[in-house]
Length: 475
Ligand code: SF4
Image 1: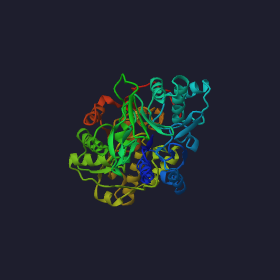
Image 2: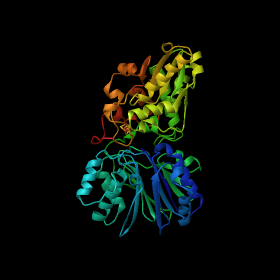
Image 3: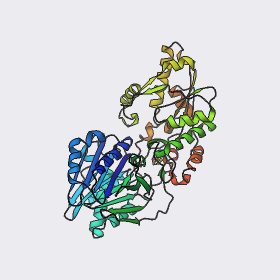
Image 4: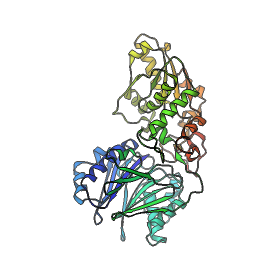
């Protein structure tokens, strides 16, 4: 998963650089492995990309270089790697200078037939520097535009969408034009709006809040929008989807920031999660317990759960904010160590309360939950309550995850997914819970219906009904 961001302005304004940096900070949750940027003032371009957070990569020196050319167009990407390595060459944006111009591209999402796309491109003589989706997409667009369509990039994007299944919300730039595009299924969000004299865009609306940018709307599935530095905007519905959109339901469940909108509704992700908690409480209540969120992923749903049942909400876990998201870390031993580093337990609560309901958004491998439960039982013993005296009920605000994602969320292969390989009862025993229960798929859809038609959401990781062809990818 990644975040893309940027702007296209009519004239340089020094505060654009700050606005761009703030967009990056506000999309940092979508990827922490790399940050990169390409920018142009209409005559000259420059670019950088590297390992690290926005604050580590967009250094004072790079900011000075950025300011020096007074860019009218800039695109950027915060990345976590699902395809290709984490080295700078696999980071985005990718760029290419041809005889007829300069091009740069960044995307959010994955190509489920990436290996086939790479082989096809290489067979046609295209040289690829990385195994990254964004580079494959850039080269497919340019190949079609220049070989078959007289350099027309909109035609190149149309060809991409007609021939390449997958999840890709992207931004493509030349020296003086910006193209925003979204695959015909619309898996990943992409918004645009206005700030001062600039068109601005981002994967999530939280990137616009800081400076009160005006959100116009999301880019529609199958649409290309072209902006230029004269302030002209042209819409092209290059592909009319024959199917309903397949927006990723995991964006509002887990990935997007709570203060972002979910796709084309004015409601925020936090309220979606709150309502999931309420629905979960109606379906799978626990009585006379304290409600405990797993920070930070379970927080909004825990508030909804406790409110619905009139139960007290308590913080049992303290989370160290400097430890990265654990499911992105390779290796079981590393992951377990990190969970223990990341959380500590408030023992004093266990002296007062003997029955807890832990709320989280999802259960992937079950590693984190198993260790949290062990930590609670160990803490109970240390404070003299006794390991087995605490009832620990687990409630999850998404249905069991049974399939890998091929569209940009870095879930592990099926063999590592708890619910793909074990019954709910067996998972409950494995993690040493008193009880374990998930929200139903129908319950999830009843909440989703308040935001959009549930048929417009992808549910493939719950149902394994994948909306496009895919190749199994070894991660
Ligand atoms: Fe989202 Fe799951 Fe579909 Fe992937 S498979 S796009 S995580 S809903």
